[in-house]
Structures are given as structure tokens and as C-alpha cells.
Image: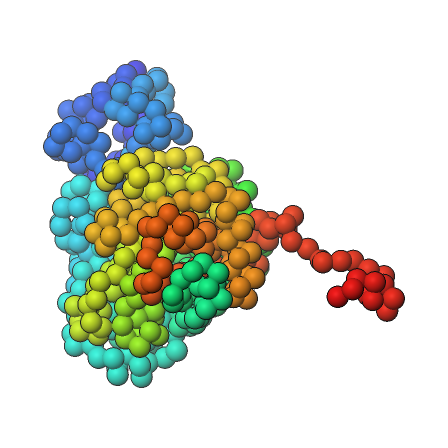
Length: 91
Length: 420
């Protein structure tokens, strides 16, 4: 299933500057694996050594923060957008 | 002025004593620039300094604003290299004997940041962030805000002659919408929570590298502005540290920076590095940091906020883990109070000290009271409470709870009948 990934500035070095890339994936874990396949090294920026989402990465499938869903197991329906965003908040 | 398009760097000394931005998670370091997240691990970047010698006398001879601490901030030494601004900071430290007596505390001080130019502590962070924007050649400043930051950015940008673009949740208190719109920058009301607005702002920032998002891309500089609350408390106490402090927690940044300020003052020999305990205050309708504290966790699980304390309604607080670290390291705690207690806290502070705080101040007063009642805060220890904002901006919270004692015809007899 086709998933559009919105790439944060700090990962665009891996995607040759592309702000969005498209991968085939059924879950968020598949998305990360597909990104790593296409852009080696990018997976280790998003996941820690234990294969969990890093503490300061916010990931959204559509409008939903995956921490309110099923984390890396969150389904990524065909045509959805995944956003990867550094965690900052305060205002 | 040239607008730099990508990863702008500035000449040495342009950020004063700041020598780099280092990742709080992995230690990876980059030059001072408009970067905020580590490209190795996404951890937050924080300003690293190489301080020269700084004396009390030098600070005391400085202006009656936060700029007296310029040698301890990531800003150019020459005021001419900073934007024209609103002279935030140097707010009063108010000895609160009547509130202390009511609560059974030996000595209580209120650091009253409602006295800032736009009536909240956000004028401090904005002053430092706009200075960074100028140094980096950015002429548009933007933010995601729960209201107080919106006021501060719009006003400071107006004063500095910069363009401002402010994003807020559309359900904010009218007082915060109007007091932002009055400064005539661009104000975008977003149908969503603060966390939604923050996410949107972060995504917009990816593709607007010529804008300075004060609490996103300029966050490392912005956050340092909060240290000035801590510096001022220490100087106003006669160059010493209190034993306890109670700080409202939204993102958690203010709490961590008060701690950073006191550690820096100790390391620089400007105060004796005496122990202190840091307590965080949240509203129960948005208490992810207090929940993590109680559960003994070092990660903060996000929540969907539902509280009248909208300025603290950040369900996904990025500095939450560091706020937990500070509370635990110093022997403090993070606790939360109901909206009913928040209203009571506002009224208690107003009734005893003549200070009308916004809901965040109500949260802090009520949390102080709760921590004392639970025996978690020492009534004999000198305590400082931070009031970060002005009650005039959150009238909605108490408009149904207070009002005239009586409404009478304009006659002498009617007044007499009141028996006052």
C-alpha cells in the first residue's frame, strides 16, 4: 500500500533533499523498514538501538500521534501520509 | 539585511558566550545556528557556553531588564547588535507574608512575571529568540502558542519592525486572541489543540527556513531566556538561592531552565551553590509530567488536554523528561490540581497578596498548597513561587465566580441598607 512520508529537514540529507517520499507499507514498522531499504542509514535516526521509536521523535499517521495508536504497529492505510517530526513544544 | 536561506551561520562572538549547540541526548555538537534537533538522534539541542569571568558588580551595573544578564545568555555583548525591544524582565520579587501565613509557610516569595511588557514570562524567551533571529538575518518571526507567547511575539516583532506570523488554537481565551491581534501581525487561528498547532508549525518550519520559529527552530536560544527568571530570583534574594521553588509545567522548559540558571550561578561563583528542591505544577486535566513522576517513569506519555489552564495545556511536553530529571535530582516533585483548585488558587493569591494571576498562577498556588498538605514540601524552608502570567488574560476562568458584593440604586439610603 502506498504511503507518503513527509521528511523532516534533518533527514533530508538521506533523501537527496526530497521533502516527501513514497513507500509501500502496511504498518509504521514497514514504513521505517522501507525507508531504510531505499535510504540506508535513515532507520537508525528514527529508531534506537532496541528498535523502538526514539524518545524525541513524534510520528503521525494522518492526524494521529502513533503513541495514541499502536506505535510502530500502527496501520498505514493506502494513500495515508506519515509525518516524522522532532519533538519540540512550549508556548 | 540579507536573508540567509539555509543553516545560517554567524561570525564568532555573534552569540556572546555561546560556543555551540549540543544534543542533550547524545552530546553531538553543531555550531550556533537555526537548528533545534540533533541530526543523529532527534534529541533537543541546547546552548553550550564558554563563560568568561562575570561578576556581581558587572551585572548590578547593567540595565533594569533581563539584559543585565547578557554575559550569561547567547546574545551579542553590544546592545546595538540586538533588536530594539520591550525591556522585559527584572520583575518584582514580592515577599508574600499573608499567603505564607494562610498556608503555614515560614517564608514565601512570589516572582511576579505578570509585570512583564505583555504580562507573562514569555517576553523573556522572545527577547532572546528575536536577538538570535536578528543575528541569523531572519526578518520574519513565527510561533505556535497557547496565547502568552502569541502576545509576546506579536508585540516584540512590532517593536523591532519584524514581520510576525503567530499560530494559536482557535478556542483560546478571547483575552489572548485580542491582545495578540492588536499588534497587527499575522495571526492564524487553527481549529485544533495546542499540540495540533505545534505539529503544524513544525511542519511549516521545514519549508520556511527563512523564518525564525521562536519555539521551534530558534528554540535553543528561546529556552535560554527562561534562565533569567532564576538569575533574578537569586540576585533579588541578595545573591543566594532559595531552598524550594514551585514552577508551572507546560512543556517543562521553564522548570529546567530555572535549575540551569541556579547551577550556572553556582559554577560561576556568583552564589553559593546551596541545595534547593524544584517542584512542578500541572492541572489534572493535562498532567502528563505529574503522571510520569508518580509512576516512576522517565518517559512522558502524551495526553489530550482538558483544563481551564490553557497556557499549560500541552499534552505532549517535549521537555517533560528533563523536568522529571530535575525534580528527582533535587528532591522535589511534580504534582497536579483540579480546575476547581485552580480557581481557588487564583482567588487565594488575589485575596491575600493583591496579585491577580492567570490560570497557570492558580495552578502553581494550588499545587503549593497541595504539596504542603501532603507533607511533600517543607513549610520551614524558604520557598519561591513563580507567577508567570496575568489574570486579566483569563477572565473566563473566574467570571462566574466573582462579582459585585451588591448592586444598588444610586441612593444614599440604598447604600445604608447594605449595613457595611
